[in-house]
Image (cartoon, rainbow, N blue to C red):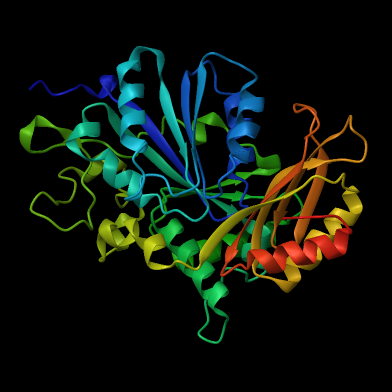
Length: 376
């Protein structure tokens, strides 16, 4: 079988990062300055409602050169995902119309599951990993919210573990939400990233959640190595098996270690089933038919996040003014409710909650009490 040339392989960029780090906003801004690249985007959300996919479509504004595929209610490329491979194969069928694939993983997913499947013979003949970007909520990093300590609660340990694992697989770490930080803050943030993931190749700064396309697309950090059966793919250094080997020519990566994978000894298979092993991560949707007063709802969501282990909130709100379309975004106790011009007013309020050992009934009860409206 003929070996595909580098030019025939479609580059894939994986964008990972913990809940609420700003991945969707960063990608939305990126596709606006894509320099005529024809993109396929795979948007993964842990919740059952595709909020991020809707936001991305609004950013694309109907552009025929931007195709968006939703992967809601699960973790992309994990063992129970039967859509990932067929979707990529369908993209490969129209490779003449696709210049780059961008995959936004759920905030609870590890990029390693995608990385592993990209190396299978079925996909390696059409795709090559361009780079893995990890987006970081820098203020939370500086506030020690990702620190691990044996004395901390189970949610904090789970958060710290997942955050560190996401960083370890990144080629590039993007420090996001930095507009109000000074140089000392940024240096501290860089030190904390390097301590957790010393093999990260580059750190980039995303002021106003914007990143130069040259720092995100076409980095070509993973060059292929010819293996058996004439398939070209980049071997994962830490993966066990007879085909595993280091890059034969380290000049291909400009003298850098071959991504953050070098530091791993436990292999991709362990990470692929991480969420299956920790069933504490939960997501649910609460809905209300009653119009909401934005400031009252914001206060109620903040108090609910203080009382319950809510880590991420996002959704569309039915406002008292029927002409207003409102978007709510929350990370822990930081809540923002804003007008959303691209969407008509919601028929009902619909909010996705994600947290660790989160109790749906308690959250619904609190929200109903604090807003004096019905949530279920």
